[in-house]
Amino acid sequence: MKIEIWSDVMCPFCYIGKRHFEEALSKFDNQNQLEIEWKSFLLDPTIPANSTENQIDYLVQRKGMSREQVATMLANITQMAKDAGLNFDFEKIITANSTQAHRLIQFAKTKGLADELKERLFEAYFTDGKNIADPKILTELGMEIGLDKEELQNAFDDEIYLYQMKQDIQEAQNIGVRGVPFFVFDRKYGISGAQPAEVFLETLEKSFGEWKEKNPSIELQNSKGFSCDINGNCD
Image (tube, rainbow, N blue to C red):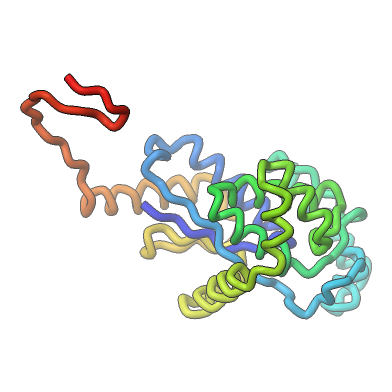
């Protein structure tokens, strides 16, 4: 069964939601029958590619909030993250355009490492205070999870990954996604936001049960004879 997750690297609730979802997965007995795909979403594509603005100034200037409002909001989010086992440091965060990060996530999909890269990007942004718009930093992060340096650098120039990112964003608009994180289960059920793990688990079990009814396992009664296997062994 397929689960699609729209999120942005610079979204704190996407990281928290990822942890809640993973907690639900740890209690789900059929993980090996799930296909999980990360989908791109840009919360603010107007952020300049070379921005080095800190998170507090960004929220004050772009969102029209007072510093007191921002401080209260970020304290609440930091506590939510802590409850999920995460360490957010908003004082260190560099508010960066996440387009290049999404291009690399699209590339990582082709290597089966999208989840690993997504996790490392979240950590780099919210905990380490790294600039996730910097190609050099992104290359280092990709190499940390096992991606090839030359292929990573080529991914920045390959238009296919930018196209795939835009396709994800268009698809989100088509199905009515207005904010992230947004989880879609078997194109039938959706969960918006960093819901508790119990909500994810309930939806997992419900959607998987319905999917299983339509996709029953095939169990054959075999009559064995002489044969050869894929390793060239014959008996």
